[in-house]
Image (cartoon, rainbow, N blue to C red; front, top):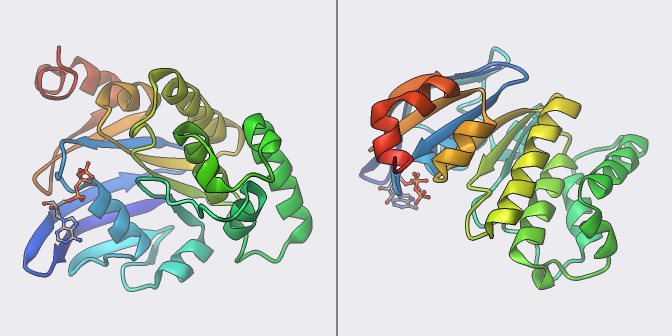
Length: 235
Ligand code: ATP
């Protein structure tokens, strides 16, 4: 479904991605783990066209997207939930969700998807007329995921959904991520510093260090890998 080949991305003179290869098949949950500053967010930014690669290629369902604009990439069915959630703080919950479906014309399906996200996260239904900025961190993460789902993505990119949240809320959110993958058949690319949770949620994983992919394997194997256990799982 998605293929990155030899992707190199820069911020001015700083090279953040040093030629990375990643492949994601339809229906998978794939995780990318790595330390602070390894290049995980940059990988997502490159896929979305926000920080396009300087060389290499990114193809989505066989079509090159590395030269496309972010809004055209969203139209193809790729949607990102950014790190730090970035909901619209002064818009209500419902208005935030409306923004997610901004590019869609299929009104009846939009209504069905709205009902779906509100059953997925009943707390958002309760808080539907509350300003986004007044929600708790966990609720804002739920809203950010729901807003992305309102774009009806086929590939959902999640940047550190666990960041700054209490363990119980994180477990809830990861359970919903798996549910979305199973019920909606949404393919998920999950970037996380919380390697333990991410490796348990995903089917396959990539490990990134200093802008390079250093390991790629089934998550069961990564969880058993001595180097991964030492560096990322603290075991
Ligand atoms: P974190 O988990 O802390 O978000 P990360 O693995 O997502 O880390 P990136 O944010 O992708 O890492 O950063 C990769 C490298 O690119 C780092 O060295 C970082 O300092 C650099 N970088 C990121 N954003 C910018 C920017 N806007 N300008 C310059 N350098 C940047």
